[in-house]
Image (cartoon, rainbow, N blue to C red; front, side, top):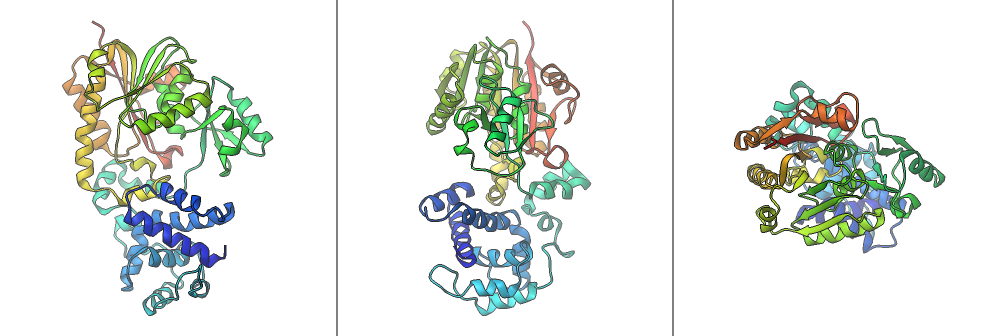
Length: 435
């Protein structure tokens, strides 16, 4: 593909993201799947244009609006090429010549915009704080309450790309063996700093073709998520529930911690996700998992199995502010009413899942959120409503499971991209009082 064709593809993908409700990675994958002729290097260039816009949409829109140009996928890409990727305006214009596979010629307004951007970088002192940090304006006060003067540092980390983290499947290999297997295929990986079962790749590679992945030695999982599963302290022979299992990432981690012994139930309202989890379980060599489709958090199955599990892991649906490195498009779809609905739903899910915990058992509450409203406030509300549960300090759980001092708090665990190099993640652990 020519550079102009890559730009045209990026504009098409961004337009599809804006007009639909699917995640950006799904839209891009579908676009490339229907165009098999686009090679790996071209896909990388196209994706780079797309994610540069998604990460910095607020700042790009500010510049475009400042010069009275029409805001949309096309002008965002054009402005991003100059402000973010450092293209000269002449090079951008040369790519837009109206050829069959390249963008249409620049309008007069677009020509004026590109000329006005010459010599500028993305940041500008007149930008509002939310715009300068590329976050939705309504979320700024929520994040400021959490980070204060450190907001800029955290947002800068959130607006960058995430590394590729792998969890070593202890059912099939230890970390040294997995690392050697990857190295034999030319893939360099370093141990993650906090998770004892994690590896971090030095560069992005197509994992699906690697022997270590095909044989189930490793699974893709951010270090923060690995840590959350380890803190559950699921042991061989226990009865464990992954209450919001999704596609099965934490289910796999819990099964490995249990050495594939005992009973592990993966609950999920989406049958499609459970089916995807089945493929991953087979590859990992996991046999102790029962997949259970629920109609909701109040499903009758929960009532029938009340008080019968040693560990219940609840990774609740949330705004996902901690995953913006991977899903920058998500922040532009969020609305204040979404947060209000999620807060209510999270409490319902948590209190329903708590019914499954036996006397002396533990309940693990996790989110990939940075907001107190979805994290500490939810744990405080739960403890106020459920007097038969007490808070287990995460520092104690860390010492029991991972060893050493917790890097992210004493009572709760809060991990952030800037401080820990992980996705934003929160964990609280509760223990049901012995009767």
